[in-house]
Length: 117
Image (cartoon, rainbow, N blue to C red; front, side):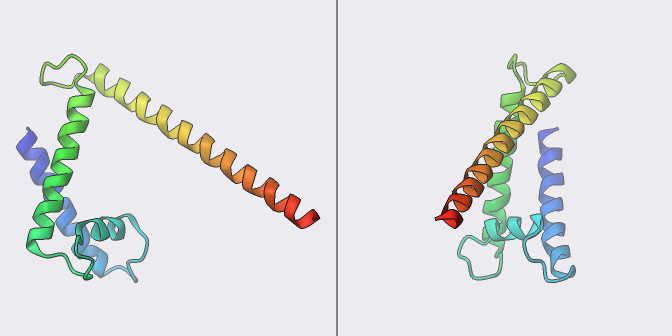
């Protein structure tokens, strides 16, 4: 199963990076960000070695996520564990959103004070 997930991830990233080249200017989208991450020497191209290193890094992250979700360490993720992981991710995203909102609000307040002075 892990091998299958790794192959799907590798193929998706490979095809996505190639497809991004044909879609508009490719600036700022998720695929563009992945490309920048894979381009470790920042020469605007992803070599085979960079691609393999990026895929290995993504696989490592995938294994970490899997192990984090496998709460009982039995080597499987149950539906319950998947739901709990999803809830935890959503909770963390909401926390980040609240922090971003508070930061924006503080910036607006500071700008208002600067305008008044």
